Length: 185
Picture 1 (cartoon, one colour):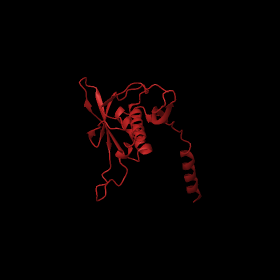
Picture 2 (cartoon, helix red, strand yellow):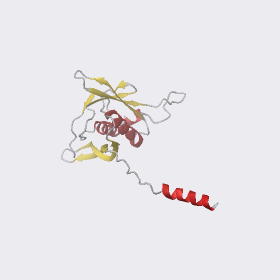
Picture 3 (spheres, helix red, strand yellow):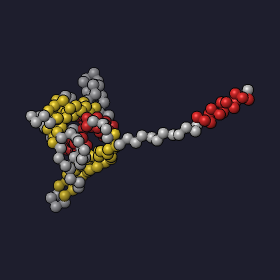
Picture 4 (cartoon, one colour):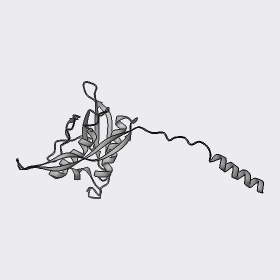
């Protein structure tokens, strides 16, 4: 019995002495998630919402543009839009064969017996001057990543429930959006 105890103890001791492998460092890239902030131009007596960095997320550098954009969309959904679905695809191309990424804002299929939505919907985020402008800024600026220097989506088009976004009073997501640098305020 004593010999067995020594063998087991020795085996444990020897296995604990193996050289440890160094953890593999995965290259990461940082992406800015935007919110909006209200600015007042006293000389003109107007108020305006402008993009404002809210947080930064890190994503593995070797992911595709589509995968990175989907991760940003998931972050936006979780932090700003009650978990509402944001689908991104890269199936459209313009006349120069440039990819136009489709960003579809999808409402859940839950409604009560009268057809009223019983859970959050994108439509709620389109309402009101402030709410609509805020939604436009959070989605467009966070997904276009205008100050990111790596390969990224150069053109996007927003959809709501599978249909291209129309021009609405309070939200500005219609038409093809082209990525241009965002100058810090």
